[in-house]
Length: 302
Length: 316
Image (cartoon, rainbow over all chains, first blue to last red):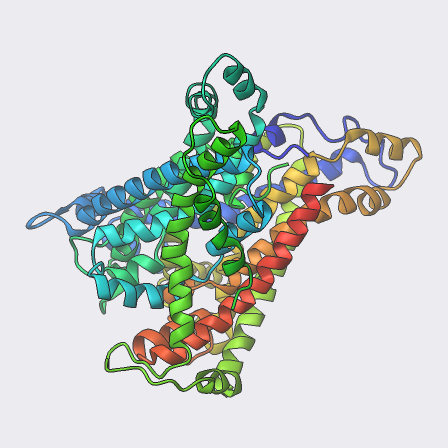
């Protein structure tokens, strides 16, 4: 089973020519289907468009009743507010920077830990391999709200509460299972014979991995890392329970904090959300070929 | 608690002790050492950050420990568990969670499969359509929750504004008992329909063309072809997607926290949200741990089911 969006896009029609339908014309039906798809696409995309629209509206247009769809005044003030506060840099922009650090470092760590493990699981006869792999994946399925209770107590003991290191560690632990499962699929695709051949030429197993297999794995590693990056970037539960100060807080809790007060500046919320979501969409577009594997944590492939 | 944990994790230790770095030994052994060296760091991290906390929670679940009160923890054995399992509050939350999980996952499956089916019948613009439909899935739950909160606002929300211009009445989406849970289901459906669609589409495009050709030579009706070719071939993959979504929906927290905070009243309090309230607002750490352990048991059962189907799919 070929499972990738690109293939879903490029393969021809499932049926090249539908036999002439007897009850109602094939063309009429096709038009109906296209209309239905268009309506569904509009419904799915409307909230996203509305968010973008709100982020560039003047404040009084944001709260207009009835809602203004087209004739509003365009402004970039909300985006300015995301990054600049009256006293210099805004708290939001600091949280974006924290997010970059936390998501970036945890992704690197998860990749460094996960890729070798995936290779070993793919190449060697490890005892109870299946059980180990299933155990690894099931740690990823634990409800975060449950895990965060003992993690909170644990971090309080060792002073990791409200530190970036604490967040990085827990994000790494959540991305390692994904990295191993996703990468194992990519390693399985590289024939083990390459390494055997290299070892006949006198390389050790490790050198064979490093010099021959790893370069072939690079595209897969990049795709896997991008997904890990997206997961950490979007993560909210651990961030809100384990951090509190502005210096440490990542963007999701910071953005959610914007609706805490009595009045909500929805224009600012929209602009912050757009700034936050844009990189994710760009990255997701880059790895669209691997989306099926990525969103099922590497479990479904073909 | 979970059987596989102690079973699997002591292997690396055994293997490690069995491989002294002896030069000149067979290659098999050095491979083994390499495997241990490559696998154990990842497993150790998981042990420290996932297994150890859960074991600690297991220990706390038998005590009356409170994170704020401090002091020593007293063993109360199964008191916490009986308190939770017999609590009418918890039963109500379980029902809410069940309605939410079943409602949202069912809606997503039907809609997602329908969209995938429609897209798979198109010859042109498939790539663009697929990409556009996938956008909601990649967004953070925080962004999704915030945005729908704004759109569903009773006063100046765009949904009520559109209803108004259609001459329909205003609905208090998030502040009425019944509509709040429906709103939650709608938002989750909006975000995760693309997930089912993506996987169903993968299944649909993998159905061999010649089956349809053979069927159309036999002049089989469209419905017959759908029922006997498409559905049986796509179903196994779809089931994986459905189970995956069910697990995710069961442990959902972010969306409830942002959209309704469990309100109005307790009408949208799912089990996850209730655990949070017991642990971080009530500070009954022992009770919350027992609660959490029970949730973990449910997740483990669901995960086993999921992995079993996954295995079956891979073997075919």
